[in-house]
Amino acid sequence: MQKIGKYCFLLLFCGLLLMTPFTVLSYGEWKEVAVTPQKDYWYVDQVLSFSSKGSIKSARAFVKFVPGRESIIAQNIKKDLLSDGAKADRFDYFVEYVELDCTKKQFAISGIQFYDSEDVVMWEEKFLKPKQYIAIPGSVFEIIAQDLCLNKSGVFDIVKDIFKNK
Image (cartoon, rainbow, N blue to C red; front, top):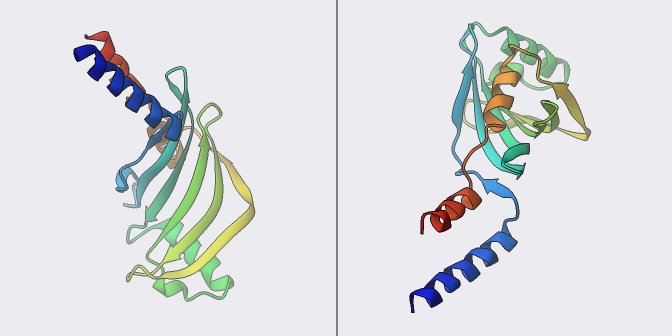
């Protein structure tokens, strides 16, 4: 009877593998990953990561930028929003969708949304061809890349440990 339970568990697990091959899903929460000297805060909500042979090769996530009071980045964003015809004084934060090649530390940004203090999208831009950026050493994007590309325990590692310990 114990053998049948083990095989049922294995069959159920194999079914789950077919539904989520080589991916790790997020829990849908913002995680603070970096703070600049101007008190700009950067958050990540990881959507997916793809791994091979125990290391993450690529990741997809939302990156959120919340500027500090003296933020140079926010001042530049407001100038750009103003030149695009948006009400720049309403800008509070932005969220961008990124895909990251962990082997090259290269970001591809396919869209960005600018929000006001009431969480209303005030300006949005989608790129037909994603904008490509390399994570420069020492930059916020290098810290974000390190966080997204960390080798995290996934479902495969947990199940492998279960069978190894029996």
